[in-house]
Amino acid sequence: MLKNKDRKAFSQLYDNYSSALYGVVFRVVQEEEMAQDVLQEVFLKIWENIAGYDASKGRLFTWMLNIARNASIDKTRSAEFKKVAKNQPLEDTFRKVEKRNPIENKVEYIGIRNLVEKLKPEHKSIVDLIYLQGYTQSEVAEELNIPLGTVKTRVKLAINHLRELI
Picture 1 (cartoon, helix red, strand yellow):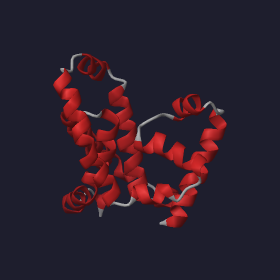
Picture 2 (tube, rainbow, N blue to C red):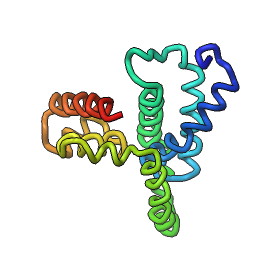
Picture 3 (cartoon, rainbow, N blue to C red):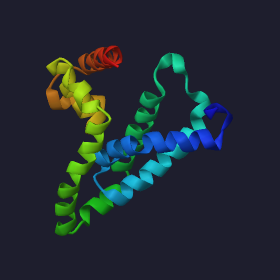
Picture 4 (cartoon, rainbow, N blue to C red):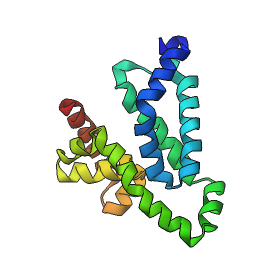
């Protein structure tokens, strides 16, 4: 139904996944208004590209999660984001820190954190950096001081293990 651009099906998709995707977006951009804008862009991309989703390559949620993560990372690299980040009053910084816990609770609610905790330590750290903190694979390689190929292999192994757990 989604591939036929059924608005009712899309509305249900939004109702079921918007909170989880918002949590991922917010964790990367760390600014409420910008996260809401990115979430809108994410669902627009999902609507426009749903025909390109291939169930044989993975779950719908994983596909949408990658769109959300990539859109969030793109936003943090934009000139607009850098300009906003430089001009934030100190009070806004404190509010951001205070608001982090409720978002983490949403991630907890859908069980992602519990599943990630079951991974091997070397996989857990990479999944946390990439999918929950918005790092790129190259940034993870640099952060953990390991080869990029190792990061890619560990991500693939971690995702396969998460599939088994689900």
